[in-house]
Every structure is written in C-alpha cells, then in structure tokens.
Length: 276
Image (cartoon, rainbow, N blue to C red; front, side):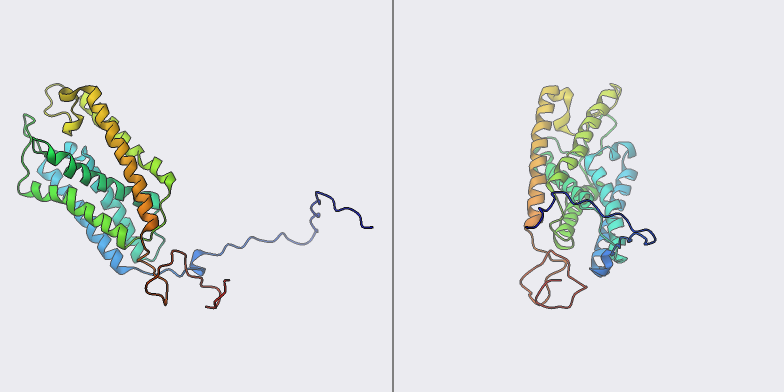
C-alpha cells in the first residue's frame, strides 16, 4: 500500500552554487513585426496641422482667453496634440497611443459637433464664439465662418474617419467610459465658476445659452446639464459597442479577403494549420 500524497508539498531548497534562472522578456517586435504606416501618418499630420491653424486663427480674430474657454476649442487643441503624436508614432512604426486617450478624443469632438448642430443651431439667437463689447453675438462671417465650420464639422468628421478606417478596433473598454465623463464634468464646473467670478460689467459671462444661469436659473441649468450628461454617457457606451463590432480594416487576415482578424499574427512558429 502506498503512502497518501500530502496536501502541501514544500518547495525544494535552493542549490548553492547554481544561479537563479533569469526571467526572459520577449519584446513585442519578436511576435508582431512593427510596420510603418505612411498613409495614416500623413493624414494625422494634416488633421493636427489643420486643428492647430484653426485654433490660432480664432485666437487672433477674437479674445484668446474667451476663445480657449470654449469646449470645442479645447477639444480641437486636444486633437492637434494627439494627432501630432499619433502621426509620429505611425511614421516611426511605434506602438499607438493608449485607447483611453484616442477614444476620449473621438468622444469629445463628437460631443462638440452634436451639441452645436442639435442644440446651438436650433436656438433663436445665432451662436458665435465671438461677441461685441456689449455681449451681443456676432454672426460668423469670413474667417470666423471658416473656423466655425472647422471646429464643429470638418475636424470632428476627420477624427471619426481616422478612428473608423485607420485605427484598429476592440481596444476600448467599459472602464474607459467613467474616466471620459470626468472632463465634461470639470468643464461644467469651470464654466459656471468662471461666470460667477466675473464682474457684473463683463459682457456675456456664460459661454453657452443653455448654461446661462441669469436667464434660466440654476435649477434649469443643472437639469439641462444632467440630461446632457446622461446623453454623453450613452454616447460613450455606443462608442465602445461600435468599436467592438466594426471590422478591422488596418490588418485584415491574410489569404481571406472577406474576413478580418483582431489577433496579431504569430511570427515565431511556421505557417502551419495548428497553433504555436
């Protein structure tokens, strides 16, 4: 009869004179060879340049501090920085930026475009980031009309197109949605606090008509903010769902033109039917 096997087997003592094994770290380039993406790099460089020029023109044509206080302008500054860094990484065959950052950029410019076209354009008073000395809105003409179109239509469309056609899918997570809502909440606190701290003779202290406390009161403004916050969070869920459902147009599966594979290609084993 054999002895029963003990529940816990103690670790064997280290043998003196034999060094401990060193953990081998295999770089990612040994599994997936880095590839340069000149088309994506060029497109992102053009978008970054257009975003930077748009912000610069608006700051020169208007008040720089007031211009930079707008949500759409801040999002465009983010686009310029993120796309410049992403263009450099695509050209140098480096790893892409974290999806938390790129997905947030897509979300924020989409929110700016949707709020402008669905809310601000429906207001009786024409919305403009440029005001007269008395606080009256100025209908965008000339350079203001061009930058207005770039802020709320052209640049958001370019960012969404880059996400759909030049960015690999299935990288966004539900955990990202909570982090993405922090910036809009901070912006709401900033714009209400900014208006409260300005002197009474300051023209048009509120940047957006639906956040005008003097006209609607805090109860209505906070109600509007709550509804827009819920719509924002719903949009984050839609963004994550679409990211996991859309096909991978960046690295399609070899030999099967109608299928797409989200997993990296194995560069170690031979191209046999079996796995590694």
